[in-house]
Length: 487
Image 1 (cartoon, one colour):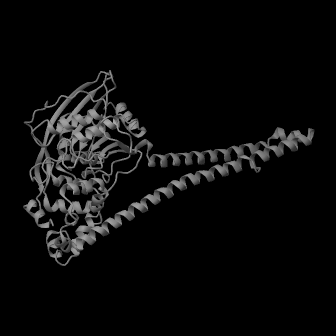
Image 2 (tube, one colour; image 1 turned 60 degrees about the vertical axis):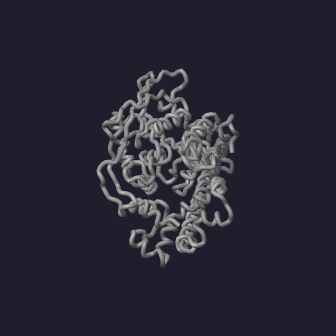
Image 3 (tube, rainbow, N blue to C red; image 1 turned 90 degrees about the vertical axis):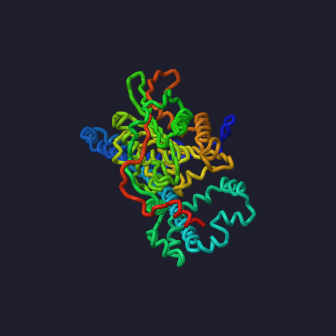
């Protein structure tokens, strides 16, 4: 854990230019350099060996047999002798295989460990699902058990803040939970009637079925009557500015579904765009575009009305497909940003994604997109995909450990943008090499302005909303349904 900066939280950074995967990549590159060097030395040895058959050298044997023999011996020793180029080439190529082989062993070990954890999580979820009626009678899943032990609401929240791995494991076992409920004799008829009795190997497949059950699918749309100039942002200079603007977009309007698109033009006429995507407005609303249905669709890897409307807003803002775009999102907004960056039908040049409190570990973001994730270990939302962010060279994760005693998103709470603003400020002042590298990339693309640099800024605002219904929910009252399923 890093040092605190003033009153800012301490942070810990993983991934990015200084992460483990970047080190793996460096080792692989070094291995390839060694292999190429070995090949060049073999070629050089062959070329030098041909000197032994040079016509002038052979002709000199008549005049000076002793010097000819010495020259021939020296050439052969330098090329094929025990200390010659061929032996050195073989040694270097062997070292190159060692570098690459070690990296593959490490990566394979990481994959085995990850698969083992997922299998254990699925098994835990399955056991809970099979025994769910017994668990309910005993006092409820996890919560009831802790309460029976004399734990108050405040103590329960503090316990989960200190042990986020419990929530992540339970979420990662969500597919197993549904499958276990489907195999429970008492619950199997209900699960079959709801269409939840299939196989759910992971959290995404469970989210997919629940999303279809509880929420309909819609096209995205824009409110043509919403003012285009609701916000007027200066060019951002650092991560703190980006999160401040995101907070203004989220809280600066009483209307749900609002986003902003900032057009930045530098002194050379280069244009770039920063798109601010706030998170969920109303979880169980069937009419809000940013609802729990969109969250479930994003975890499942499906398209959303929100993403469709963001695309329409960028068309309305006349964003050129060649101009660099950075997507900045909180919670569901970050999930949507990650999903759009990897969507082959999203015809925009997304080079950077910044997320705050978003579960995006399984989003499949392309390697050519630079990602910076701000996370609070006291916030449960980033855990909702059941996975930790990849420690890849293109994905930098900044974590703080802020415990407010509430998992909510109100000012100062664990999931709030004010908390993530503090984490962004701490990252700005951290001096961490991975953070510095991703921020330097933002400056290079024109998303962040240097001090004293004249940058023209124009901010457009749009209200996204649900459009035409593509598929209705499979049940009419999701709130009542969840009430029946809850312990």
